[in-house]
Image (cartoon, rainbow over all chains, first blue to last red; front, side, top):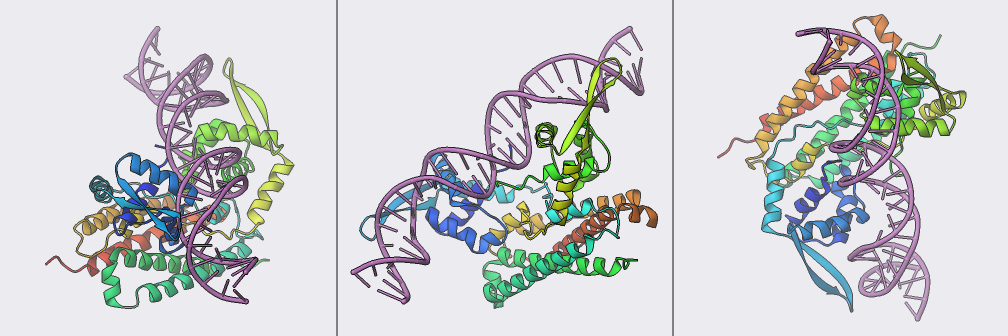
Length: 183
Length: 183
DNA sequence: TTAAAACGTGTAATTAATTACATGTTTTAA
DNA sequence: TTAAAACATGTAATTAATTACACGTTTTAA
């Protein structure tokens, strides 16, 4: 496989909660799932067709207003089965994080390179902003213990993302401190 | 752009240090650069051709043994310029880490899901192994202060990766502790 | 001496993902 | 009442990336 087509499982996972239209799925990527995965509608509609061809989902057409057709997709029993299998199966491939900043850093040879400190400052700003954003999300999305228990996996990954960003900011900070002053 | 074609910059960055053949570049991805970026030779050879067409690199043919031709690529002045520009330019897009385990976790709704604890254990094992591997690399690749200063960027990213994995393992550990026992 | 491993360079097929193109309906707020 | 925003669904073109196909040379170790 060229990749692993995770989009199909995301779609199954979302449809496993509620029936949704292609448009609804697209919006899900603008909202919470978009925090850690991206997909465009031009990828979603063909994937829905493939999943339906394979029998993992079905759709019913509903009319909105006078004539606007909506296709409401439902997961099938075999679809739910496939989803369960995917989650249950091992996940042995640790994602190689293709971080462009890290890549650039690789080509910085000395601590006196004048590009280094500005780069670190920019990343510190960006990751601090991201951290602030994630902390705000945690407060709005999971304000109570009950809400955390209700959607435990999502709660865990938000927590994880916050910890990751906090580490990143801290590392940038420590690295900036460690760099010897220009001579 | 569909992506950002970072491979071209990696090639330029490596050629900026020494002239290399396509085969050498391929091997670089099996070695140290492969720790955080992947590319196959089937991607590298066409990219070399494109970079040469654009005037960023040139090659000279050398004969190895009786008749085996090697193309040794060199970076040009405009290529070095392009590399410098890429590094100097801002890196505002924080990589969305597409971590399959995190994605699966999103679809785990409750802390009583029987799949949760095994998943966390597997990830703890994998990330512990990765951490151990990275720590060993740090010791072999950068045994002395001098070696760290010589390739400062690379040293920083190895350090960063170790901290990241240490955080990941710690988070998995804390999460396993926090999960209520089955009833 | 000979076979395997490593060296060395390519192309083809397939899949994934992004951007752009394309079209029409319904709702909402000025 | 009307224009903009949101709803709704697709296809086409392009680029990136992986796997597979393809071929030949040189070195090394049994």
